[in-house]
Image (tube, rainbow, N blue to C red):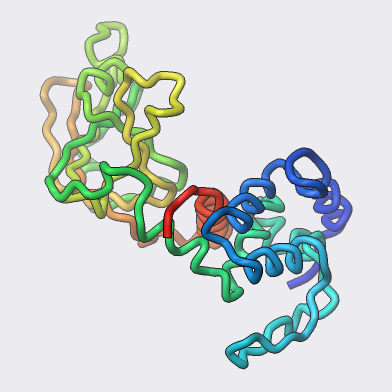
Length: 264
């Protein structure tokens, strides 16, 4: 663990920008979550301590000692550590992670547990579709394929026609196209509906988070160059040994969730 060359200067620049006074645009989202109607003066203080001050050895109300091992380190210093730089974490990510290790972690945990929309309470099985243009599915691949992990956010649609269009399924000029039929058993393994801010709301997109795990169920070749793969999703990191990707996904989720409005 160390300070990445030039990282301290780069991290300091991240702290400049719009938003609350002295808070960069990205970090301003976390600031809003820790200064909203559900926050108290302790949450406000912890945000200011992590964002503005250097780490110090402190004893919390519950007797837990914090700050050990990071004494004298400012937020910019945390952003410049090898772990943060290698994972590509922005200041808002590191800020959210640091706050999560405090007694204000409930500010991040609660929105996760509450869910973000009424759709999150759906207990019924749902089917989503993902189109892949130019994807040649060979017999050798299917004999070896048992599961896979999507490292990035995974876009699907509950409208098969949208996925077929994306895959160029009906385009005679496209020699290879594939569809992934994603069968979710209930809301615990479903993605989120981004229609409220999407530029293509009519596509009925359902967006799965990074590191979504897909378990192979079966496949069917409808005709040469046209294969449908059926998979079952879950939010496991199985098969992912990329620590940087895991850290980035977790930090990004925390930073975003810290800004979600919710009612206690």
